[in-house]
Amino acid sequence: MATPNSNHPVHELRVAITTSEYERLVKFYCDGLGIEPAAIWNNGQGQALILNMGKATLEIFDEAQAETIDELEAGRRISGQIRFALQVPDLKAAMERLLAHGATLIHPPVMTPWGDYNVRLQDPDGMQVTLFQASENKEQSK
Image (cartoon, rainbow, N blue to C red; front, side, top):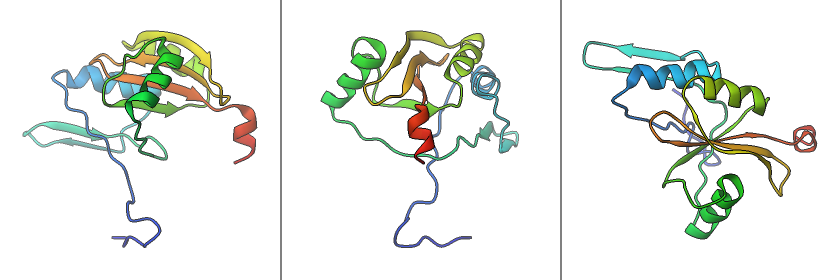
């Protein structure tokens, strides 16, 4: 097991979703995003899986910032305390896949003031999900 160093005391962020519609949500995220599970548990006491979602960050907003982002992406304050924001390489294709797997379109795609292309969706359990595609200029500067 790796030991944390002083520069990176957290090695991984995991977000756990509990649902009464396990198979529906598995299909939504796996098929909708085109992700294969990294690990699956089905031990007779319940089911779970892990999806590797790329690099993880934790954003903490005050109410004013949450309202600003919701206004930009959804036209009004709508998201709950937690909202996913997933960077995808092709926003249109990812949006279409998720819509085909049960997403609800909250607001059509918008160009943000910082140059990303964002769309707001809702998963079948009601979780707000922002898909964003970084501008080509931002991608090239990485």
